[in-house]
Every structure is written in C-alpha cells, then in structure tokens.
Image (cartoon, rainbow, N blue to C red; front, side, top):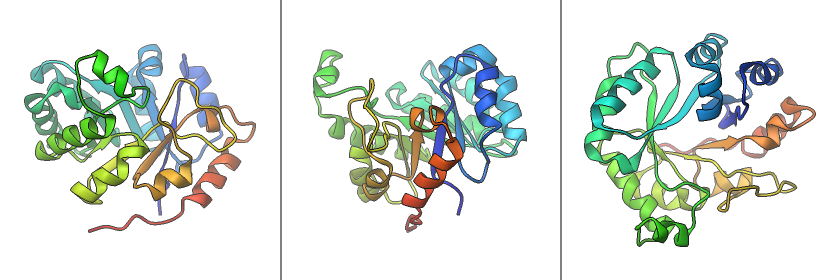
Amino acid sequence: MSSRVIVALDYADAQSAMALVERLQPSACKIKVGKELFTAAGPALVATLARRGFDVFLDLKFHDIPNTVAQASRAAAQLGVWMLNVHALGGRAMMSAAREAIESAPRRPRLIAVTVLTSMTEPDLLEVGIEASPLAEAMKLAHLADDCGLDGVVCSAHEAAAIRDRLGSRFLRVTPGIRLPEDSAGDQKRIMTPRAAIESGASFLVIGRPVTGAADPLAVLARINGEISVPEAQE
C-alpha cells in the first residue's frame, strides 16, 4: 500500500528542498510543493520531483476567473503532478473549468478543492462575511466540489469524517494541520495527530515540520506510516 503521508516541502529555495528530498523515498511518502517553493524554484523543480518517482501534490490553490484557472490547471497537469488544487470559493464555473482542462492529460492528476483553511476558526469566517461554522462551510463547499466532478477536498481532520460519511470514501479528504503528539501547533488552530486524523476520516495527511525538521526524516516517516497503516475502506 502506498503511503498516505504527503510531506510539505516548505522551503524558500530548491537547494534546501532537494537536500531533504535526497533523504526521502517515493515509497515512504508523497511530496507537496506550495506557493513559497514554487515561486522560488518554478516548474522545473516540480518536474524533477515527478521524474524521481515522487507523487507530487502541487498546492497552489488556484482561485481566479474560470479561463485563467483552466489554463493554469492544464499547465500543472503537463508537469506530471499527481494532485493539484483550486479554491472551492472560486465557484462552480471555475471548478468545472479546471476539471475539464485536465481530462485529456496523459496522466490525469487528481483535482481537489480547498474548503476552509486550518488556520481559520468561526470568528475568522465571520470577519470575512461567512456566517457558518468551519464544519458547515466545509460541508457546503465539499458538496459543491463533488457536484463539479472533483476528486476531493482539502479540509481539517475535524471535518473529514462528516465529509466521508456524506460523500463516500472515494471522495478524498486531504488534511493539513497534522502534528505529532510532542509538537506545538504553530500557526494552525485546528490540528490533530496522524493516527487520530486517519481514524477521523482523512484520506491523506499533509505533514511538514515534524518530518522536515527531524534529524532522521525517514525514521519519523516510518513511525507515522506504521501508526496509520490501516487501508481505507472503499465503497
């Protein structure tokens, strides 16, 4: 069974990112490239990671007019990524355009939508005009993403079970905000440990500092993979 851990390469330059990648194995984890690293290193790094055999989650959270997001999604698919994402708040037309743009890719990536950032709580949502709890908002946006034909969502592990129960196990729940029991929360407010997140309905776990900051990243990954080595039931 392939790993359900996605290591977040939260680095400011390609050299630092590749120094960690050299210590990892595609069988032990997948890789996430976000805005900071992509801005610094560009598409070439993403293509390099894919050629090395890593499943790459390109986490750029596209959110723009439908045509722009469609073109960006098509370009991302051409890099050989395993997964990419858009913001669900971009709406039906935008998400549908992104899905249609990647359908003809030689290796069609999974397309998921961001629901509610793990840094946001109910007061944060209210401040931007959303009068709903994180769970209610995540559920609403997950339903919309599913209706648009997307493969899943990015959500907090706290919302994963409800989304799985409503939309089924094949609709992916990718959960950031994962911390080991001994780690601090940092800037994320709705966090959970790896085992608890899997038991709560997560499909994949996005984990950054607990792995990237470890003296022995592979040992930490082996520990996490061992703790969560329960196949997800498929419907």
